[in-house]
Length: 428
Image 1 (tube, rainbow, N blue to C red):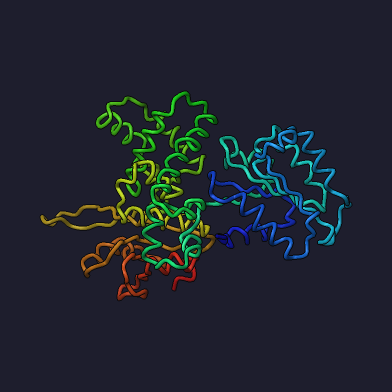
Image 2: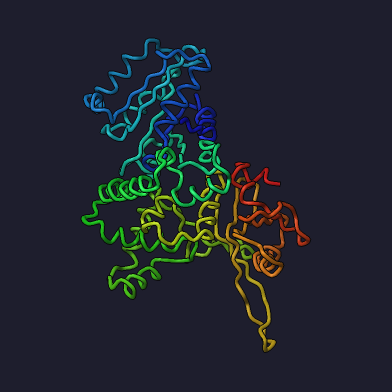
């Protein structure tokens, strides 16, 4: 089975020869190595690059152990480059492409890679995924000369394309339960999927976090993950979580420690934080936030495949897809005045599930599993119709709702169209 990753492949293709080190990041087992070493390498060959001009090295391979020494690695790469060019235009056939997998295993790898920035006929690509090789490190360690391509687990479109024999409904149900890690996509037995996801979370992801931040025990971190996993789509903050630990688990843990642990989970690509944005006031609100998991299968595995509420899983899935499409995604708040039964004026805050910005484009989105009647439609669009600007207002609906605009100018989009058209900008 070959799973196409055209979205990320195009990102790598677009970054060719940009004078920077291309750094492919993402959680373990999301397909970074396959993208670089198979799909991108095949692209180069199909476009006329000779195989001896593509220098590949898997540093996780035991046979490469001696090359984990930075000086030995530098010497080996130099030996593979048979032509050295001076600054100026370089014919494509004289380019060399260096692709290193799991480069974090090399001490001082930044110095090794930076050594090739001034060589015009060498283009460098690397992957990294362990506790050290996280997003913040990419920004700092390459001194502004690193070009990050962040890879996520399979989108639903990628996932379903690997199983054309499944109906949309069957694929969606499996994806919501077991997520989009590529290896999971190849397994046929659900028990194997569950065991793989559970072990991966416990033995790999938690271990990486412990190593990076020198956490002596993983119990508290595990408890925190369970709380976050149980509350996807809900507003929370360290103080609220602190109270949850105290009242339901009998555990005393400070809110500052919880805030630090949440940041660790974000840095490790396991969860993403959506902050609140006051749409009318045009300002961010410090707290509370929402947290979403990078992969639904990992989230479900962490809590033993309980709490499979499709409304919340759908919201998490929409959030992930919007982030993949390049949007900055916030949680919107719309304040308006109304009157209670006694005729007294009061201010009410309504929520917009997602305020999405990409360049000059903005779209407001509500996630609704079903719109069975007019009352439900009015409830879902209450916040949207009170936003007085010209940007699109959208409700994404899971059931078989025909896409189109309603009388209030709100766009209704089926979840199927949203997931399979791959870009919110063309879902019209």
